[in-house]
Image 1 (tube, rainbow, N blue to C red):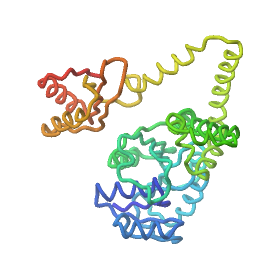
Image 2: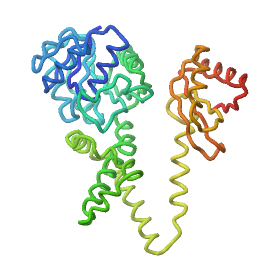
Image 3: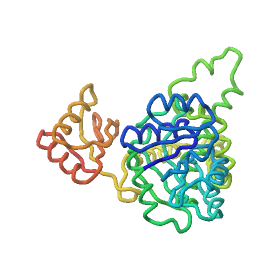
Image 4: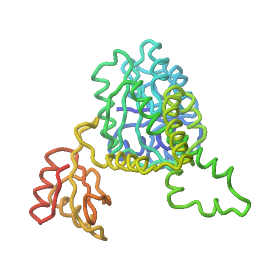
Length: 358
């Protein structure tokens, strides 16, 4: 199999690194920066590259366009004369409806919209990581009449990257990410800009901005080019979510002005946020998780991880979460299937661990 990648930044570079690490797939790449191409070639991550020659993709089975959302349709149109008949073209854009609508009007291409829901505030090939997509959702939004066999091929690519593939419509995707990704980014950037505007000449706000402030504004360090493009492309869903958010802030402001109790505001947010850690049958994907009641201390994770590893149980994700359900803490462990989960429960119970089947 030959896979082409246009745009060898954080996402494109991470895809290339993951595929090279886990498969023998040939990878050809195009990128604006020659340095990134040379670095990737010297790293053994790509096999061929070009700055401008689209014919490099003529033997590709899959081409992944990893550019800003506003340029994706442009690159797909340029690719059309060079690709072979059965080639799948996909992208990694954070918005899907506008792209899918545009490309559905181009005849004789097989386009499957893609969005790996992973990333970093860091940018460029230098920040790419082979494990970036592990345990992340990989959204797929095929356009009309794409054969199931092609969708299955992309599902397998997502799984190879370590991600969890989910097939949904472009409309559902865009409204969902507006709420959980795009508007939060706008809020984080707005908060930073607000503090900048309010900052005093003594520099106290700038100096004391640590801990929680840095945590909730980390994403404001992301690429302005990327986020300007995303917000313009997903304008309507973002505006709908912003209307709801603004109304929520106005109601809170009114309550504070009237000296009303706002305990329920924080309680509702806390309870809903905590529910993210307790996924069940109502979620999109099936999760195979357990919680183990442990003391939150050095070595707790290593001991259990080693115990399961020597018994050939494959762990997909693991970590301690402090929660009100347990006095000390709970070690949450996710598995790739029901069989591994059940085997882990039996092993841990045999060693007198208290296990909760999630």
